[in-house]
Length: 294
Image 1: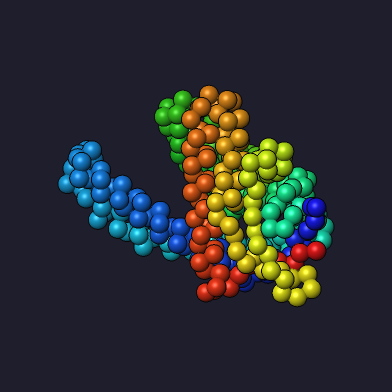
Image 2 (image 1 turned 90 degrees about the vertical axis):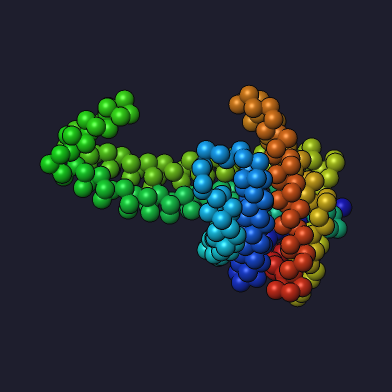
């Protein structure tokens, strides 16, 4: 029997700490893979065009330090704010619902899943749009006010082959760009994210669950507060990878890139499996993710 549970809220600190730790480690793993690949390229002489530049010491080793740090701290920022948004939006839009049968997710109601995730994506796009507008508008105003604005326009046209208005119209360009970034970008992000997540849920519910199901072992802490105790690796990774396999087939047909579905399956299987393995390893050490399920 399927028991529908709604994620009413997510505890901020445990989620942020776990997410940042996982992606910090994934950053290190990615850096090691890149380092090994560069070492192979260096040894086989494929990178002879680089001359005396050493790919391993020049790029590979610095990435060992940079990628884990970047993965850890960027995930802290994204996870922290995303959880705040989720908890704030749930009373207005409703939370993600999961149809549970024991530890197996039998069904993901499409609308609730897609709606809140696309709303969060739209807010992120709005913030990014504001930042880009704050950067671009002064630059366009500065260019438009320079005495050589016409020369800049002419050089741009000669290089790109695209004609743009004279310097006196740079202000209008800035307004159009601002509207596109602040209004258009969030709308685009909402629509694309909604469609993508709705398709994910549809494919999972009606196709993938016949083969594999996402497994999450919840443990009750008190009343409606639960912790994610353990994530079975193989069934979860297989289920997620199969969804993206189907999505890859569809996008592959549209783009005529028929190998995309294979790469989708491999990438998402490995990524999901690594996340589950790391979660199971880290949970006893740094604490589990805690959810208000009702």
